[in-house]
Amino acid sequence: MRAIAMLASLMLVAAACGGATTPPAATSAATAAAATAAPTTAPTAAPTQDPVAAFYRGKTVKIIVGYTPGGGYDTYARTLAAHIGRNIPGNPTVIVENMDGAGSIKALNYIFTAAPKDGTVFGTFGRGLPEAELRGDEGVQFKSKELNWIGSMNEEGSVCVVRSTSPVKTLADAQKQTVTVGATGPNDDTGFFPRVMNALVGTKFDLKTGYPGGNDVLLALERGEVMGRCGWSWSSVLSTKKSWIDDKFVTILTQMSLNKHPDLPNVPIATELVKNPDDKQILEVIFARQAIGRPYAAPPGIPAERVTALQDAFEKTMKDKDFLAAADKAKQEINPKNAVETRKVIDKIFSTAPALVTRLKEIAK
Image 1: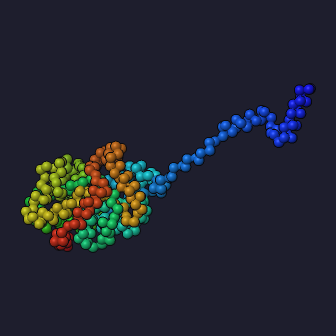
Image 2: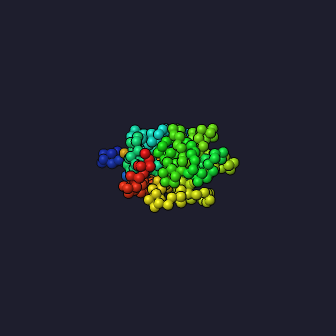
Image 3: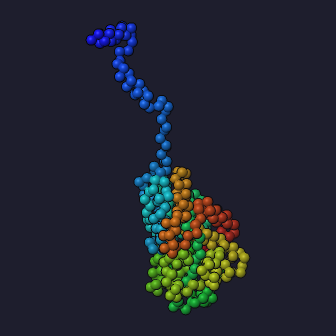
């Protein structure tokens, strides 16, 4: 009792002097709490979200194809669509939309003039359309140098074939007698290449135009509506109708490119068939398009960072092992060009000498 009384007296003295009245146990607890409190330094800021990924997340990106389903441009685009989404920031869904008409001019006009300029639309179309603009072809509303070029999936070589039942067996035969060939339009590859051959090599190809896509030309060939097709990409032959070569359903008359394809060492190439140097220059201008055989471009006016994202995604996809395996399974050749390389080809086309442009216009009439 005496000890308790003394302790009480000490506490009263401390209180009177302004001292703390906290019991020792409470003091120890407070000290421990202070020791474990959060440090006084400012917390690290959360990383800023990638605005490109934020934009594309949950979006759907459309690849416009200027031809009907089943042809080379369409099948290549579908292989690309199945894989490029995972290389675009935000991993959007990617789909294909076919928009055939006028040898794919309709599609490129849409991409240039009417498609959303936000990076959710890009497309593929006839590789010869920049040259169609150069010639001033009717119906062209696009400006190739203002497009945002994404890249090209393959460098192409094209062939001209006829049914084996045709009396025309060689190119020399085609210089002597008429043979009907199908085309999607007068100024895409399927139409313009045979017209060039008529003008410069002296063939007698009779053009039947108006088919919505290359696959429709092949159906017409199969039915006997036409006897041939020119400007047919060799990669498309391999991926869609290789059996026609193996079974000798068609005969290859010539190659239409700057260089022979390794698969066709014994098939003559168009540039070897002309003797006039000016005519050879014309063919070199026309076949320059083959370097960007499966081109892709987006509208002008897209924010630069989204254009870069699409270009980078395309380039990454061209090296992606799953994409390459899918292309190999589909028998699609992949020999890509990135955006910068594609742009160089476009610039070269538009640096064509005025005299050659005039001659091109004459051939296209």
